[in-house]
Length: 193
Image 1: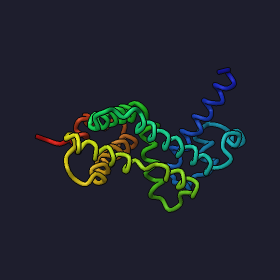
Image 2 (image 1 turned 90 degrees about the horizontal axis):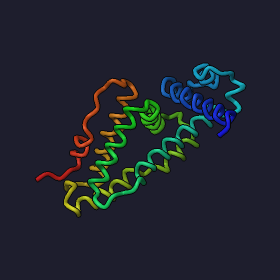
Image 3 (image 1 turned 120 degrees about the horizontal axis):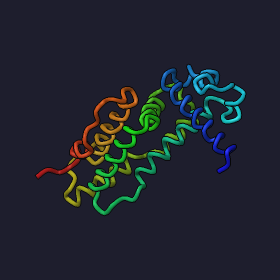
């Protein structure tokens, strides 16, 4: 990669980070290109070379979140379902602790799901994520293996995910918050005795 391409990628990353912070702080309807340009320490004109408007930037951030979620789910499901959940919890907790961008992405994705002013293009991108259903399939597999507790698979999958995403959101708000051991989170679904 040449120096010019490296500069472009660094600028794009700075815009994404500034946009992420602005969207979390002000919401979509309260965030302007000028806000993002100011946070990224660049001119509005330069920012327009990367993103035509706030909606396009929001779409790009959402796509990063969707791809990150899909990567974690598709990262080689092991033979044993519980091993997958242990790997997922460990990977996610390590990532949010070392990377504030990742932690903030969980907060943004949650806000995007809840906000009434989320653009339709972003809502459409969010619909690509069906992680509760994906995890429910693995819960059923784990129940058949005898490693996951009995109960409604969707309820168990949702409880596991809500715990992890809640922790990521907390880290986005306070990076010094202590995180639990991954096994503590997995204990939510682990069959005992």
